[in-house]
Image 1 (cartoon, rainbow, N blue to C red):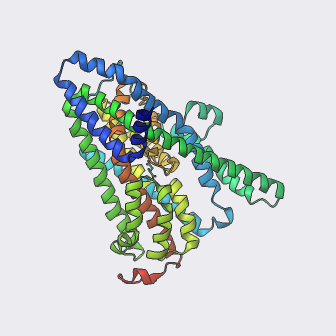
Image 2: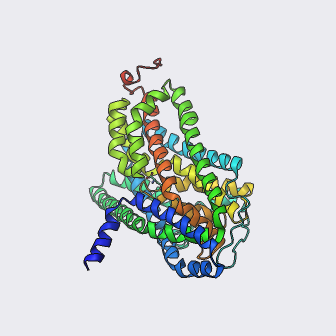
Image 3: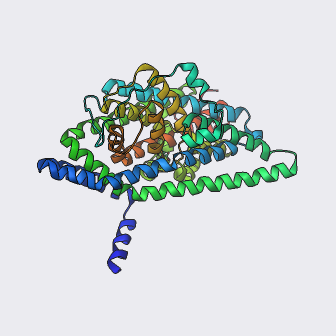
Length: 440
Ligand code: ASP
């Protein structure tokens, strides 16, 4: 009993990130080690541990729809219609445009380095490499609007669910503002319930993440037992491609946008530094919110009226780092299973990943959950034992490292848009930006 308590105490007492990294390294070592022994032993290891990896993937799939639905409903309903004036529209505009640009940037970087190409991963079950028939653009757009939301929920169709959740959330925010007291009261109650439900989903994601080290160990050791040391290169390339794209977005993308408003990127980075570091280590936009709010107001001169609206909204819907990640990982996985994305599928990824990034909750690991949906939209089903599941498992293995980077940029993007909109509205306190020439 004491030992059990001790083991549990040790497990939960150690930082999750550390546990995941240890699991990753141990998985790589054990997996590669197995390739030196008898192939029978390696096969036996893979089949007898598969259960623990499959449980992890199933848990992630389980939580996809509820997380998107509740997170988006609360995010959209949190926008008070009366505040959704000029500032709100601009904030939303920048959030959506920067997300779409980020996915394209991710796909562009992936096209340069082609991560996963030539790997030819075969699943432990029969390889399921069915080529997706690419629907036309009109069909893609039409399919965003559900004809039956319950059918979409049951089937886990991401685009219609996101569309409906946003429409529902916006309608709920109007209902909260209703002059009819009974309607307003009911809507407030419904809002409280959906907010609480969103929190419950975040707790479940947090719980699933506690299992992540075990899942990561099993998945990664199986991948390396089957692939051998040659899997290290593609994963490293994916990570490097991803971080290169993040840095380019930060320096060039954000730098240009800030510059267009006469704001200096260096001053910006200095001011936002604390929130950026917090995001990197906590891997949670929501968790970083108090720090983002403070740096925005104190270091960057964004008035509270704007920051208190744009940052919580951004932590829910603006995920530029996640958008880049979704693009690059979709390319990696499709390449790895020998089904590189065609042009139509890439367009599909831009659309789905933009919306999936909007639907990503600001908690650790949720981007990896959304990746499932993006893959699904281009015909890559993550079924136990499939080649796509093995490739997805490789990403899951390094997900903590990618999550740090994406959260870092997610939060920086929120702060950047807050500063830009404040400047655009003439409400930015110029004294903190003294270093660069002020523009009217
Ligand atoms: N962890 C990220 C965030 O909180 C979301 C993600 O997993 O992509 O911003």
